Amino acid sequence: LFTRPWVFIRGVPAMKFLPPEGPPEIALAGRSNVGKSSLINALVSRKGLARTSNTPGRTQELNYFVPDGFSGQDADLPPLALVDMPGYGYAQAPKEHVDQWTKLVFDYLKGRVTLKRVYVLIDSRHGIKANDEDVLSLLDKAAVSYQIVLTKTDKIKAAGVPRLIEDTVQKIRKRPAAFPAVLATSSEKNQGLDELRAAIIQCARG
Ligand code: GDP
Picture 1: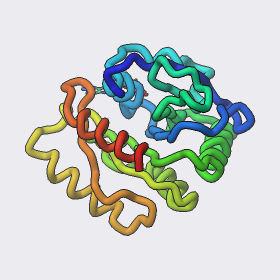
Picture 2: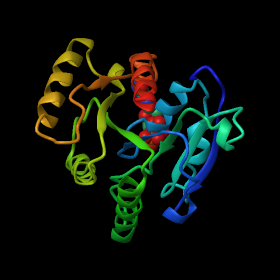
Picture 3: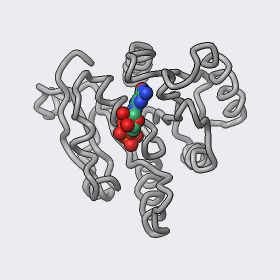
């Protein structure tokens, strides 16, 4: 699946623009600059795929990616759609921006039956911050399964990675919708990507 070319199919600024429910959806969320575009591009081995849809003005949209070559008709649905959620936590974001983000994301989380799981990306250097906690609480409230993915592990000492994973596992231990295992990745160094691909595929099938 991840060896096929992937394409961008739609940017969704509000619920009414969502594509009809079809393939299982796996969403990715994270603070701006966490490395979300880089990770999506690395997962599908297509430099520039996620970035092209991340031009300013489209940052408040849910961006849909699917493997190429499916008509989208009933008998020929793609087996999986990746949904790139708008980044959060901009220092200068005006309040109405944050409110709009929260509304779009919460509506999507609550209303999307085909959403299987959200991968929440956390920068290895920063760990879980207050606005990440807010998003995890939103996911718990919406009762949507989510899993933490540490990004940019090449930026910290290799010896520190197991400890960071353990600390992160402890931090989410009491959260009701959190998947207990934490994944560690580096898009730059191609680390942890096969594990993440396998987890995504398993999730989409399950
Ligand atoms: P986004 O805002 O979450 O989409 O983040 P980007 O994917 O645009 O990445 C933000 C910055 O982090 C860019 O300068 C990337 O080159 C850098 N970056 C992303 N992933 C990695 C990684 O795995 N390792 C390192 N060292 N840098 C990364």
